[in-house]
Image (spheres, rainbow, N blue to C red):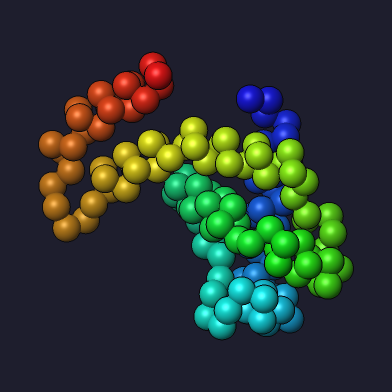
Length: 129
């Protein structure tokens, strides 16, 4: 997978998440399209998996409603082409095991040291497939 398209896609998705959280007008339009109280996961600089979560939340949006929203809100530069949506899905598929491993090993309410070796072996198995 070429890194340049991935950077462009993540930048577009990050901008979209920022718009939802920083613009009341855009948030209202987003909720009108996708449902009241619905939002996108916000990025968190200290946790890599927040990127995975917001990419996944965008990938789960209805593409027709998504495209309509962006056009109506004069944000066509954030539209994802069919190829970009395909790359996004592939990226999420690659990152899914790492996101699961991160969730498992960052627990606060249970000891995680026993999860480390099985998690590393599981990731190794995923990478070798």
